[in-house]
Length: 392
Image (cartoon, rainbow, N blue to C red):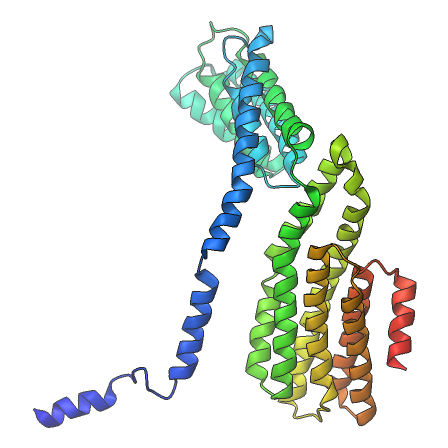
């Protein structure tokens, strides 16, 4: 029995002191870091959503009041505040599209439901048939979730209401238009958010993530650690959601600046942010290419000159400086200097001699540096000229 017990202990998985303890602990710590919600995060979320809550409450009250005073919808104004809250709650940058989908979906639902009702009449089975047909037609015409939802909901209302209740279709359409327009007026004109703050809150996570992965790639390249660079590549591939949110935020900020009189003085700074977001997206794409070629350099056991990892690290520091300068509202001189420094370091590495993959890494460094320079409001011709001068 003692021998059997000893054999079981020897064959059992290693505990915290096993050979893979460090890797396991690193993976768990990374998961804890990603999933941990700090008090600061909660306060930031509360600050953002408290403004949205006030906007939604104001829009709902105004929509009820306005719809109630429109003679055609006095007996059923409830859908107007629902539409208004849905417009406010829509993702930033998608509110105008939300209103269009709302009205189009209601109109489509009314048209299709009435057309089918003349053929099959009212009833439980008929309602199911009408809703199914309406949703399928809406998907075929658009496929957008908001339009499909509104078309299906309106079809339910039209088919379920007894035929002796007149005007329900027109009331639904008027309420949809009223609520959607009221919601837009509240978020754009009456109680708008600071458009630059909206964009920066969306840009900061993407910029910090890009900075962290470029810095990690530079350090891993210096250690010739391909697995760490693969992790950085995976992180860069997963930035699609952050970049999409940044694009939506820029679009929403443009809506506020365009239609809100008190926010038009932000137009020029917002234009710089908008251009910066475009070049940030391109820098992320180029960074993915850089990490792939860095992995090939290590796997092929190519020559590696020390200035090359330093150049990649400098790019990460440049993105970090750019985010800090944007947040402080100052001229991004540090980010420009870091970007050109990275080009100089990559050129030094190239002169020391590099293989095929190393030369490709140098090309990606120059591309990323050019995009970062353009993100600092330097036009393309000047940015390209500065990169060439630094490389020479």
